[in-house]
Length: 230
Image (cartoon, rainbow, N blue to C red; front, side, top):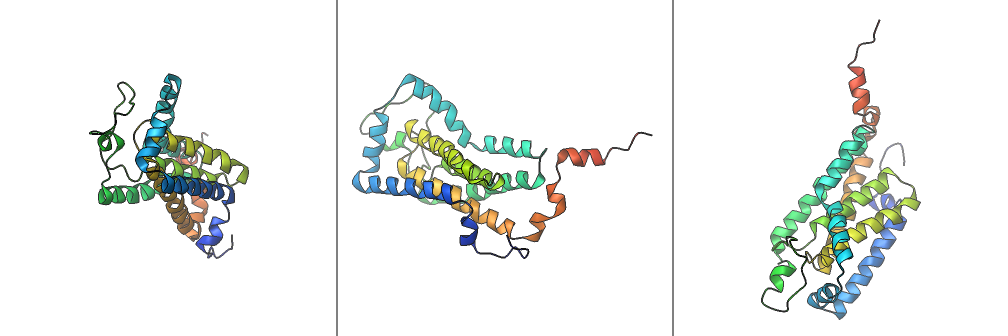
């Protein structure tokens, strides 16, 4: 990174080759299948393959894509580094805002409503299904935003495939649990990744973001307020 912090978005993206390559592969596979099969056919194929253990596992895994998880990680980072905590909250809000705007514009029904008067779908007992605002997937957006932000914080490329894999499994859980269609995941993963990276890029090229006090944390802040014992 140059001392002036001035560089293009494309140059910034080069720091995440593994994550972006895996995302592109996921998009190509998803779009290809979407051209061959309808959203209903893709969903029903997954819906026909259920197992009790998988039901319980995916109900737990899917919560990793909910905003309280990102918030909890950001709170932990308050004790480590202000900058990282601020970044996690900012990317979550930034990507979440655009996701909600698109949801309100598109207003696509969830699978539970889409198949309400058609083919019966498998649902997990006592598991609450959402009815509206399916596109894009909010959980997918949130978890991909979290994953790419952590990829920035822990910049080593060898961590990127593992963070991507976790985000992908969370995203796929949304279809397995009958909350979303595949196209919702494709859109959510793009928004979560590239909108988060766009915001990080804007921050990263700003001098205030690299100020010395941004390297502090809550413990150091509290210790400063303590008077030394004589």
